[in-house]
Image 1 (cartoon, one colour):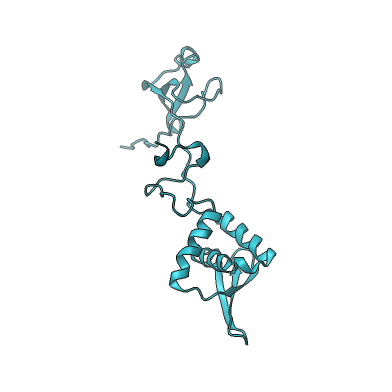
Image 2: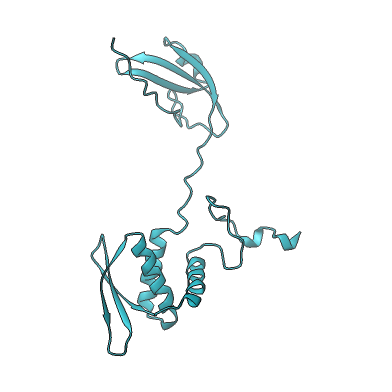
Length: 192
């Protein structure tokens, strides 16, 4: 016996009769029919239900539309790290040398940049050559030779520059994204 496919689509974000978008927490009616391509779902607002009801249905149910939450943002956006690296490299500010190196390493770990060569200059400074995987651009990044005790400070600086929690601020629980609201508007524990 040939069994029908059970690929029933998710609820629609709009009424399939009038085309109006559902609002959050709005009740709607779903109807399941069997057509030429298998099971078909029709979602409609309560105002259009009398019109949609005319078709023969296998199943009918009421539900409440919930706007799906937006996907959580990446903790560090690739574009932001890359644009920050480009910005710092254009300014050639020596005080940004450590941040440039950390950003390049971050982008290497994310497989955006690939290290192609390392040279030691006559003055002893290591220079790393990174290639952008998509564009083929070469980034020449001096290796500042950071010590472990310097690394944490530079990492915190870079995280702050990328919009992460500032050093000393409590971090979010694992899996939570940072708030996009201004910290000046939010009460702190010391305000209580």
